Image: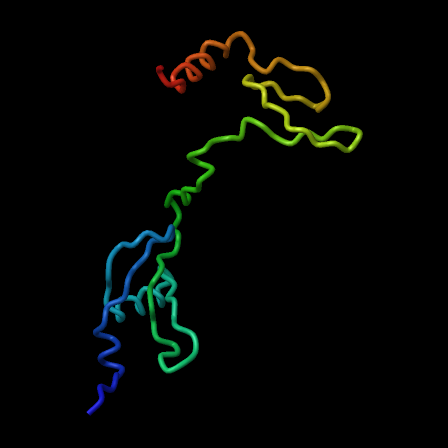
Length: 133
């Protein structure tokens, strides 16, 4: 006799629970996931069409106030040191950002890339990155 899945066996099963940033928290019963969906604390991901259409595959927690923002690759890399400079003739060469906190309103003006107060920091970073022979 083939196994027939009933609504009661569906409720006794467990599904993976993910945080809002897609990290796996663990497994929870389907009945708890359904309660979380009703409460608005989680979103359920269901299978599309086919024989198992509508079957709950996982639960994803919604982001709550006070939760940290999702970490992105840009958070680890930092701000880019170079950027595309718009010239009046239409060319877009690469330009280097200044190390100081000066705001430039004119893209074509000359400026100091390494002000004297930031040079020791820049040189220390440069020396730390160099490999010994």
